[in-house]
Image (cartoon, rainbow, N blue to C red; front, side, top):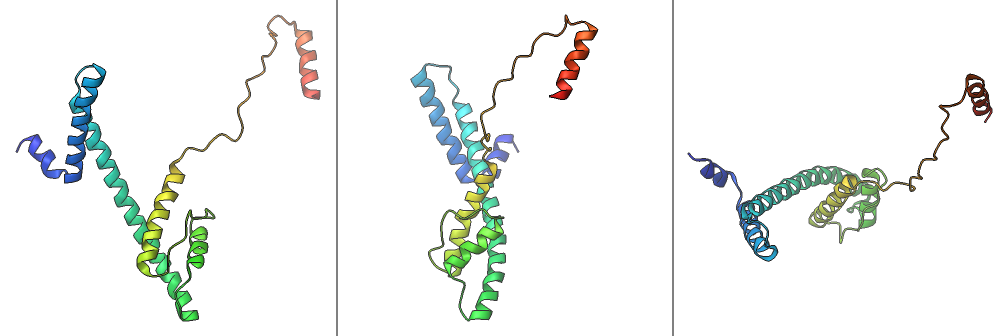
Length: 168
C-alpha cells in the first residue's frame, strides 16, 4: 500500500474536499500574485484546517453530551418537585452556575430536550472560545523610568543613596 492510498483512506470526504479547495486557492493565488507556484501548500493548509475543525466539532459535541446529561439530572429534580420541566430562565441560571458565573450569550427557545441540546451546543462552543481567547492587558504598560548612572559614585555616596531609598 502506498502512502497516498493511506492518506485517502484515512481522510474524511470533508477533509479531502477542503484540501482540493485549498489546492485551487493556492493555484489562483499564485497566478494573481505572480509569486512562486505553491498549490500543494494550499492543499495542505485546507486539509489541516478542515481536520482541526472536525476535531474541534467532535470535542464540542462530546462536551455538550456530558453537559446535557448533567442538565437532564437537574431538570429531572425540577420535574419531580414541580411536575413540569425547568423553564428556559432556569436553564440560563443553571448554566451560568455550571460555567462558574459566566452568563450564557443566549437563552434556549424552549425546554424540550432537543431545544436544550441545540442551545447547549452553541453555549459550550462559545464558552470554549472565550476560554481560548487571550486576555487583554488590564492597563497599558508604562515605559520604565530611566535610572541615573550610579557607577561613578564613591562608597559614601552609595551609602547615602541606600539610606534615602530605604526611607522612601
